[in-house]
Length: 97
Image (cartoon, rainbow, N blue to C red; front, side, top):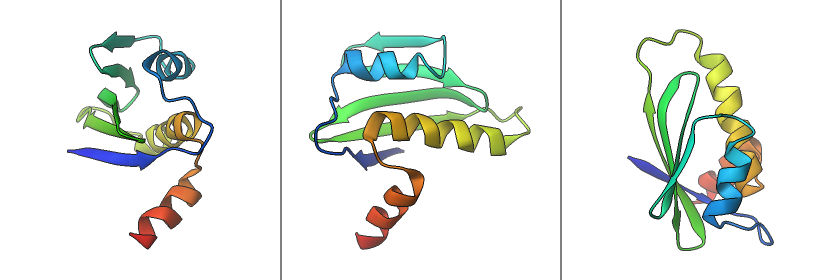
């Protein structure tokens, strides 16, 4: 299931920009038709696609990975670098919906 994330005004959400920001977190970044795929420790597939003015992010967890606290920190940092919203700001936005 994909989750939509709003993007701050002024943030570029082109696939090239998303891919370059993702390379800061993973060396395994692939740009395909309409999406960027990567892996980070604890998530074996993370797919980011553009959905209007939002980003749709779909994840597939790695069931063999044990320390998810590090995964959550890395995931939140990745999403913040792409959307411009911190996890606290995203939580507040989702609460309004």
